[in-house]
Image (cartoon, rainbow, N blue to C red):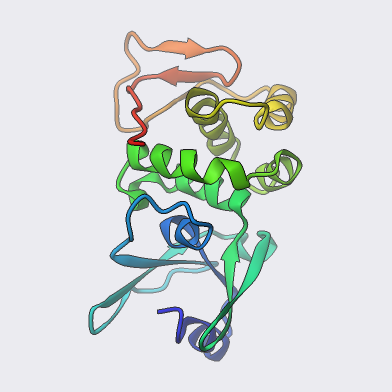
Amino acid sequence: AEQFIPDLMNYLGEIYYVGLLSAAEYHGAAHQRSQIFQVVVAKNRRPIRCGKIKIDFIVRKNAAKIPTQNRNTPAGIIKISTPEVTALDLIGYARHCVGINNAATVLVELAEKIDSKRLVAAAKLSPIAWVQRLGYLLDLTVKGDKTEGIAAYVKNKLPVRIPLMLSNSIKGAKMDVRWRVLINAKVEADI
């Protein structure tokens, strides 16, 4: 897919970046190779199947503003999300990542590449609920001070309480005070 995505997106005049598990793989953090190549775009686009290759397009309205990195491929240069954006997208689009446990597993492997200052900048371009969940999961799975900047950002935003997993009931869920996340699921990173 990396062979033709840049040319295809250029031909279509689309802003894009390789994201989620596909970007995590470029950053050396893919727990296992994804069967689907994931591309983030600004507007809806149908999936493409080309032989054994399946490409999913995930919509992010502000894709044009999202920080990316250029990577050389045999066919040219491809845009991928930065490690910080990748982390936020993994949490924000967890259903595209085979659930929150898989996202947390990849997050553990990605964490060493995350810069806390760039994480704050990426957080400002993302829904606050994504930032809250990411902060909680980073605190849960990764040791260190990666979350100090986004914790201050979240505190200043005074967000509402949100469930860790939207699909689960919040009845009886304890709240993580720092992130204002209702812990309604047990997260296990498979490392």
